[in-house]
Image (cartoon, rainbow, N blue to C red; front, side):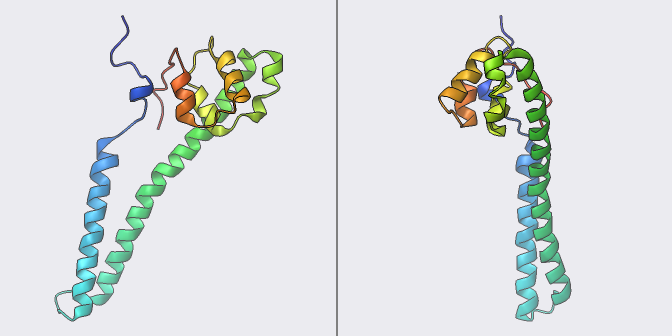
Length: 153
């Protein structure tokens, strides 16, 4: 019997609640608070200093930018690693005619193909190349014997 918690197409995306939900909410609240402070500072309210309010607004924007790019940079590095691993794996399991076509595969296609077992990888690679299947999700849905990637970022 298969492990019900095993990774598959339906659950392979990784969500870290503190990162994906809590952190952006806090950062957006911080930005909203900085906007309120700057509004009052320029209204002449007297409770808020203009200089500090401008700095707080800039820091709030910078924190949101950092939050976004931290994830983007980590995924870019992960994609580069997967690209290299998959090119090596494909060169080991594909027939000579398909091996010559490895450079035709895009990074997105390589990333999606990583979930296929070694047994189905040649057939699936040929299908992806011949039918020009480009969307990661379309390729992942074709995988019959899902190989988990538990080290994903």
